Length: 212
Ligand code: URA
Image (cartoon, helix red, strand yellow):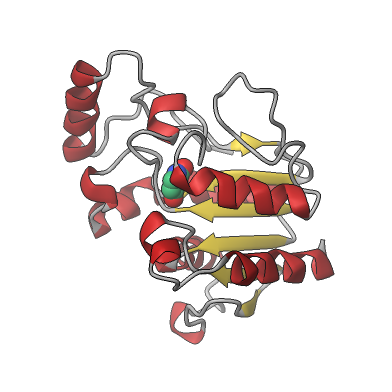
């Protein structure tokens, strides 16, 4: 089994250079590939896009310390997947329960937008993580995460065709042994524009609870 995470990875030159730049401006920030959070025995794997500048990239924990944090951890807590409703720092005593959080891209991308090549380069970690954990349910937060998960699954099992599974909020896809559930990403843009409401987000995790 190969790595699910490499703290020293600098395979994407643009991302490595950006991390160096951000570190120079914010010396206290983590500014490295952000490791997954939660047990490798978890039945639920939640896959985000990539670390946020002042959140995961600053604290070193996915979805911790920024805008997305309260909605995601608050919802996980409401459904019994997190010990506490907030995640503010890596040493805040937060813990996930039968749940693990990871990102499709482990390094902070400029403007929250990894290139297709960067997503592709990082896929091996996500693929190894899925193979290691064998989660019952995978929640994809956004279309990039959805496509990344499907690329991992179809690389392992040729009967899983990416084109057969379209991203849609609330959709439940049976992909081989995995149940993939889609949600809009809990980003500031999506919540501010009303594309994703707290109720819509809760409905996704209510659905997860039917299976986990
Ligand atoms: N923080 C993360 O860790 N991932 C996201 O997708 C967004 C914010």
